[in-house]
Image (cartoon, rainbow over all chains, first blue to last red; front, side):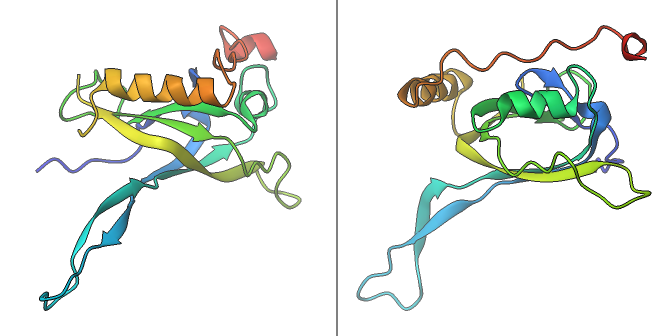
Length: 135
Length: 38
């Protein structure tokens, strides 16, 4: 068993490492389930359809050059490559790299009440599939 | 893994070309150190 503390995720957006401004990441990997139930079946049957993955990231907003806001603004409305892995260790079977093309949308550049840290939580749909590599 | 990386890249490149988004958006340059911004 290899449980772990989830404090070392490495995340890049359009090749920019924003890990030190990320407080949470969730890769939602799903696919459509197509029903193929036919006469004679006594229960529903399904096969895999199109993938429909998405990625949810919580950012600490930062206006500095090359940081969160500039990086996301440059990518806004476009499909960019996003990568994530559990730790900074070399990619391996125990530290796979997830690579996906995301349509950057749902930005909240200014967000929060007085006294709050400026943050944004974004959910991006994946264009295509999520590639999982171990080497 | 269902797709080998080369197949995934080929599919991505074809998609980006299809939507007229090649080459990929250039990333804003990241400062060498955080101190530079202060």
